[in-house]
Amino acid sequence: MSAARRTGPAVLVCVIVFACERHLEQATPGARVATVEVTPPTATVPVGQTVQLTATPQDSTDAPLPDRPVTWTSDNPAIVSVDVNGLATGKTPGSATITATSEGKSGVSYISVTEIPSVPVASVTVSPPTATVEVDQTVQLTATPKDANGSPLTGRTVTWSSSATAVAIVNGSGLVTGRASGAATITATSEGQRGTAEVTVTARPPGRGEVLVGAGDIADCGSSGAEATAALLDAIPGTVFTAGDNAYSSGTASEYANCYDPTWGRHKARTRPAPGNHEYNTSDAAPYYAYFGANAGPSGRGYYSYDLGDWHLISLNSNIDMSAGSAQELWLRADLAATTKTCVLAYWHHPRFSSGSHGSSTESQPLWQALYDYNADVVVVGHDHNYQRFAPQTPSGAPDPVRGMREFVAGTGGRSHYSFSTPIANTEAYNTDTWGVLKLTLDAASYSWEFIPIAGGTYRDSGTGACH
Figure 1 (cartoon, rainbow, N blue to C red):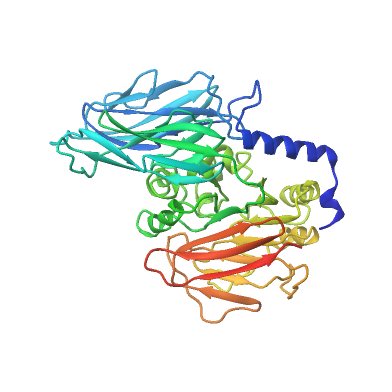
Figure 2 (tube, rainbow, N blue to C red):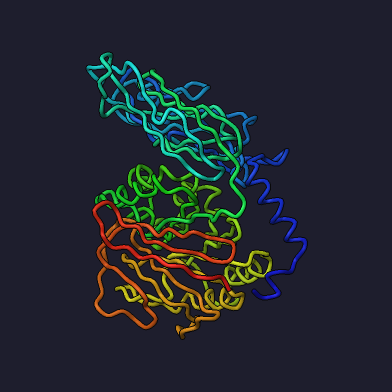
């Protein structure tokens, strides 16, 4: 590790304060609302039935601001009305967008209204009924609506809520994320009937490796791949990354709502994304920034950093200027100089090295050079729809087992497959026909990787590496 990465006491104070805020999930007094999280993000209700929406104003570190007033509006109240508490009522078949606004920031939920079902929901069973989860980890709950005879009902809308969002949050699919030590009651509601689970959140033991898991090239409404890879995430705790091209084919608001949100979107609260070129098919990738909010860093910029355990993580934007002296490259060097972490991982969309149809690109070489100069360890990219692992190498592609960075191409999120026949130099492993996710376990001075295939897939890749 270079001396530059140990300097900067003023920056160190900021990093420590930021980490404490994130860990305790307490907003800074007087903090401004940066985003509004609405759950569930999508729902379907029969005519005459209701769905309870919950709006959580958050500051720039994603800490809840529960004392802030929220106003609710419907863009089509003849189809869905909403009261001052976020209770939405289906009026007639169709769809409407419900918006929650606090201090000028908004979040939305897309509601569809259907005809009244012939058999009503009489009860809701949540399993497991009790669960324990560590801070920053997840547990998947399942809700089963039942009729009066106790028989399961399919096709019914379920909404989720938490009694203590500062302790645990729950997304639209029942995935609970621990935020701070304590207890919370998680409620599943369907057609006015409720079931609950009691969740206890415990502190994370010191020294436990952090998990970073994800892929790029993800959701297309015409492909089942994103749902298959999202199912893998359901069972893997930790922080989720995306390596761009999250919503095909143009990253529109509709594609994020209808293709990404029903799949990987159920892990939105724990996702730290990067944009791809398909996001920029829509002007300035505006829907990408609107959808992910503060989790995507400063809106419109597309690059940011955060700490995860003993690691410093950096999400970069390969769709804008990456040249030496560019705003992004200068920011990256300053960020690397400021971090006190020994281990560094960066991820973005376009690969510096790839055997796929898109191939290697020298445009990101200045970013590689900056990372290499500060002894970074791992790079993860997408763009080519396959899996590739490279040996540690220099920015120009020369083998370097001492200081070189290991690159993973993980364009396996579910959109499609790209094949190739001859791997380029320094390739250690590859696969061209399997969707899956890359799971990285980040320890104090080392890391391990595992490529996990979707159900029915057989290709796997795993190993370990040490930080510089």
